[in-house]
Image (cartoon, rainbow, N blue to C red; front, side):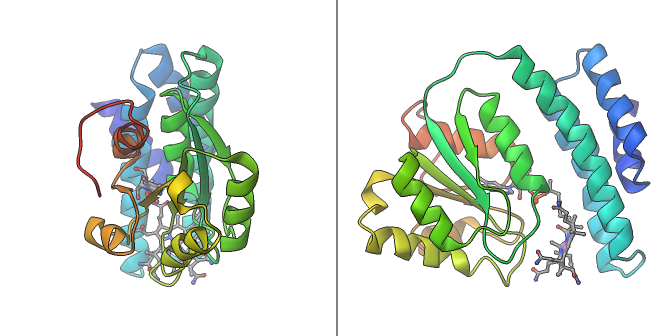
Length: 219
Ligand code: B12
């Protein structure tokens, strides 16, 4: 679909006005927001990642593209929230782990979970393990969802699981991990209950973890 290519291109060019107007166009045409995010905007961000890794572009360009993507994704989020919908009363505490400011993927996971009836408490990015633990105590969520985009920060994920154990909270909450460097085998090895490769999978896994669906395997 041409629209998805245009959306990817707008992210690559870091054109915020364009990402917003294309998101509006997608909604007007009745395109599924999640499909548009995954096949449009996220494809553009993948290409940015490739160009950055090939040293063809520099950090400021990545930042501009990230901002353009965020603006487009926000428009979809407002639309999905305004539609309301059923809520399962199941809760997810979500955040990007400490030392890591990457939050685009985490924000997409949040939108997907919200539009599938979960109540999401978003701790934001660069969230210390300690803050996760304090919020689990306070909010008693069904699931803790943790994102990491760097090999240097994903190492805090097992620390979070250990801290949950030490605080006597591990049996009361499911842990779901995600983010580009996280692999399913690793998530399982460090004791997570679930892993999601994409935002769509995050929803499938979250539903399974809280007993709302029977599909899928344990991470
Ligand atoms: C955009 C970006 C940035 C932006 C982030 C803006 C933002 N608000 O997020 C900016 C410019 C700020 C940035 C900064 C840096 N970045 Co950067 N960045 C990227 C880039 C290009 C894209 C990431 C992205 O948004 N992808 C798109 C989203 C949609 O995908 P995603 O995050 O994977 O999320 C999906 C799934 O993983 C999953 N998911 C995600 N989270 C979760 C959580 C759960 C629970 C579940 C179930 C699923 C799930 O669902 C999502 C949607 O489908 C990547 C390259 C790449 N190839 O990934 C580098 C990359 C991640 N960055 C990298 C680096 C090194 C940095 C910097 C250190 C650069 C620097 N020299 O300063 C800083 C880090 C600062 C810090 N302390 O965090 C490296 C990391 C290398 C490593 N060690 O592993 C990468 C891989 C680039 C590279 N090859 O060098 N970056």
